[in-house]
Length: 141
Image 1 (spheres, rainbow, N blue to C red):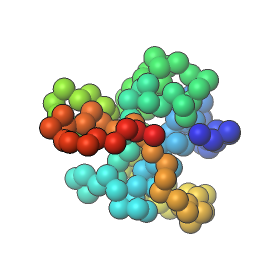
Image 2 (image 1 turned 30 degrees about the vertical axis):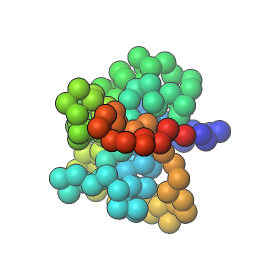
Image 3 (image 1 turned 90 degrees about the horizontal axis):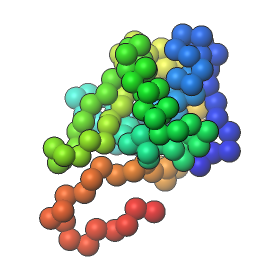
């Protein structure tokens, strides 16, 4: 993972400090997926993970704090949350930016610089629960 966390002051003022740190990471992953044409559903790019799966990105937060922060971002209208998993019992959450926040990010010179510096698609999040009928499942690394 990264040794440092970033956030934008304007997001901290609008959504809260913890929310802005998590939001910064979600924006990065959504833009990464857009750049690499991954996880597109209903015309939007998404990132997914469980609260537990986000812990390596936010080791200074508990699983419960992470879950509460995602709920707060959704309630405040910054994120849209859905489930595009193949199995109904898979509750891994998918996240994307609200339309207004997405427009703001796409106009931002800061995020344009961030996207232009993305060189690798090797960053991974936890996979949704796999289909048990698949043979030769490779372990998540």
